[in-house]
Structure formats: structure tokens, C-alpha cells
Image (cartoon, rainbow, N blue to C red; front, side):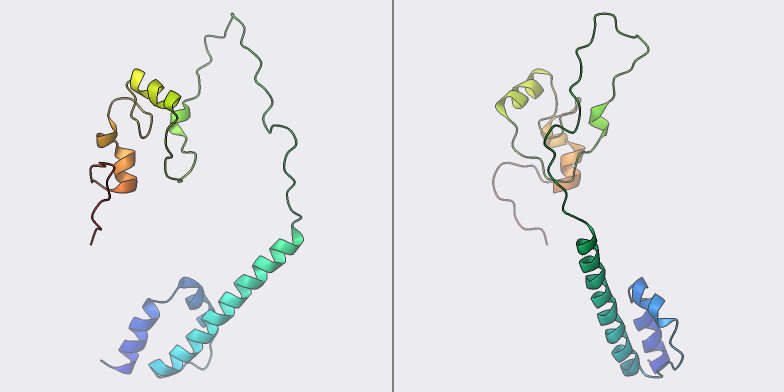
Length: 152
């Protein structure tokens, strides 16, 4: 493999931020070893600047005080004369976070069983072993409550 081919392949694998910083180099090295030295220095400079930005941002922003009262005002009770044009929001369509599902409270578990809802995602039409959300997050294994073999 020629030195130029080695350099070309090496450059293709670099982070975009490093590539962006290399465009201003006028005296370009002719060897892979020469490029390695420059790229290590550029990467170190980028990392140092990232740390400086984080320190600058933390000095500028005062710490957020905890709210002394609820963020959302209490919802007044609905009257018996409701607007028929109002459609309730589908809260199941909102993903609150990517945090793994915790253990359900006994009340929530009973509610889901009574209403034939999935015990994992809370949606109707399937059970936990067929839950797409669970399979996406944890893979296709059937959860038995026991440790699963490590995937290779």
C-alpha cells in the first residue's frame, strides 16, 4: 500500500471536527507518521476547548432554584356541560424518557390487568412477551425473571 493510500484511508476514519480543523493546514505532511502527530495535537486542542466551553457555561449560569410551588397550576374540575368538539390528548403517544421501566405499583398492575393492557408499555392489544417496545429495548429474548446468557 502506498503512503498516500494509507493517508487517504486514515483520513476517512477521522471525526468530522478533526477534518474541519485540518482544512487550514498549509504545509501538509507527506507521511502517515507526520499526519498522526498533527491529528493527535488537533484532537487534544478540540478536547481542551470543549472543557473550556463547559467551564465558561457553568460560570455564566446561576444554579436553578427549586420551584417552591407546582410548575403546573391545578386543573379545575370539569363541568357537566362539556364541549363535544374537544378531543382528549393521547398521552400514550408521548415518550417521557429513555429510562428503563421500573416496577409497577400494585394499583397500576391491577389497572393494566383489568383493562387488558400490556404490563410493560401500558398499551392495549398485546401482552408483555409480544411487546414491541420491550423487544426494541431489551432484544427478542423472553424475560423469565432469571439472568439471560450474555449475547456474543
